[in-house]
Image 1 (cartoon, rainbow, N blue to C red):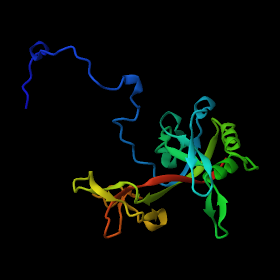
Image 2 (image 1 turned 30 degrees about the vertical axis):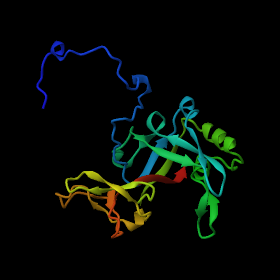
Image 3 (image 1 turned 90 degrees about the horizontal axis):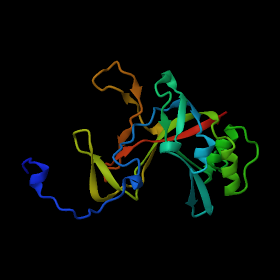
Image 4 (image 1 turned 45 degrees about the horizontal axis):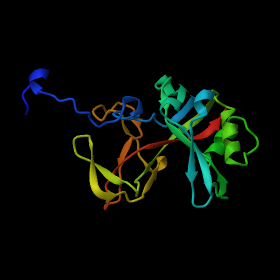
Length: 230
């Protein structure tokens, strides 16, 4: 270990050092994302119009062509206006809402999350183009809506897995990808919020262990929104 000394004693030169200027460093570097709020019914507020103008990203799909994503993260996150027991009132909520349709109900009708959000906000006609979807959602900037938070867990087959190292931290397993198994809220048992206190309330775990015996990945909960109402 190097001994401490004075700056003058280091004999530092004046050579220019490589690195990224501060105004080009992403805001989220060095930040850990907080645990998502527990499943339940919440009241949310969309960002202001000026913020929502720059939340869009293109989504390429195999079956439905190019679609769009509204990215409510960081400075454009949703605001939790009201939460169960007011535990998360005023906090930000990270969410991505796309117009990529997926099959719903027994009839397998094609509906996207953005369709459900727009209907919940009061729209009665489905937009026909990506630009129309964006314009429709932009009209609701700053508006509030109610929705239910639901958890799901996915063992991502495109990413190397993490496992519990026995100390409460996660350790990456180099070269081993996830197995692709999905878990839904109905598949997962609640646990004590404080394992040391049998009287503590039960909650859904933020992390679960993949039950595939050939995998065993530690999987983090992914929060989604459903049941939209104005």
